[in-house]
Length: 415
Image (cartoon, rainbow, N blue to C red; front, side):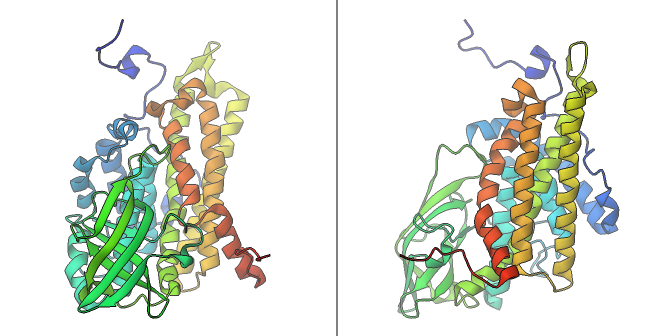
């Protein structure tokens, strides 16, 4: 019996192929997107890749299986100086939009959960403070957030309002010197350990959506972990309960006075989310490419079989198309021409193609395709929440549909 014995080292006990703890080299940039990047963005890309491959890859399977967050990597992530993305000043890196997107993809190539952690913190919470906060709030919060000395979460979704986020029911009632918040939030990444939370609530006087910065330890604020997820297991999603939580006037975000203001943040963050599946599929392709060359069946490498080559090429083609869509989206943003519909199309189309790509990767690895050790099974599961969050595939498709036809069809007609 093996009770009490340590788990086998897969690579030594069953040396079928190299596991993802020793990450494969990048071979998925077939159309050489790297050449389209500035020297600064190329250097950033390589810096992020090196840290992710060396510091995160060896431990990601263990933490994913335990559904725990690897706090030990936070200083390593901080050293990359990518938190804050395109925000200028306040200790933020002031990256190009493409550089920020490339960094997100490189993190996601090794681990989608770590990518989600930094995107929630940076492209949602920090971006909201930068776009909608007062000068005092920016100076107070952004420098510490940029260094990852302080961690943030972003709370819009509620138990009853996911895709219908604009109908949220959390309330903000004016009181002397501040606001009283009551309500619930759900699926909030980083919430179980975040030092600050950006909370959206409905002003009981105006019936409009307002934004607030809520600090950890605020009386009446509580966050508890959502258990039993099948994807992004390293991300600590939580349920937030607000019960008569008092928020000082200084922590109300003055630039959020309607849901349209919230959408301004989401339009930009969807650029980052459109790049996440690019990174995930690059990692899956790189893993499959190495695996097919190493793993032998019927006396030959799996890569020598025509059907496997066709699947590999189909995956590769999807990745090139996804990357070029992401690249063009960044260029449209830089020129001031990007529309919400374009951002939504990139997010929805890229996640759909990524789903197809990782499914092919799972097939290529056979039985090993259901093991976290070889990355593909983990990526297969992690893409499901990415396909859904920041607008489901369907809702994002209909945002684009509304833009190209002029006809809104998201809300069903009431009988």
